[in-house]
Amino acid sequence: ETIKSQALKYKIRSTNKLWPTDHLFPPHEIPGPMRYGDEYLYYGFLALQLTIDKAFILISTNNESSLNVNDYNLEIQSYPYANYLIDSSFQKLFNIVLPIFTILSFLLMCYHTIKRVGEEKDSGV
Image (cartoon, rainbow, N blue to C red):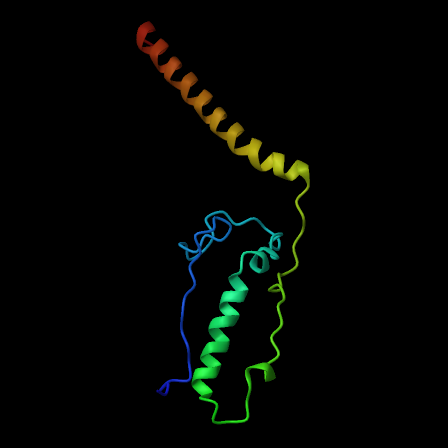
């Protein structure tokens, strides 16, 4: 049996909560590189991917050429991340407090406006 196409397309979906593979993009992206890159090694994701790739190479070459799976040099490294600034604790606190303060200010303003309109209707001004 021969393979007609030299391109292999496949998807690996994990049930592990560490990688949300059911989403195209992560729901909440934290700035900066991932801190848990070694988990790919520990959970066997890369081992499975490597096994599938080696099997495809063996089947597609059909052992007709002098190429061997061991002739390919495969390396594992993290995907590079662009330069970024690490947020300080004050910045993280500010990111939480500012939206809450804005909402509370808006609600307080609405409350006082409604109260004032009610007072004007009662007084007949």
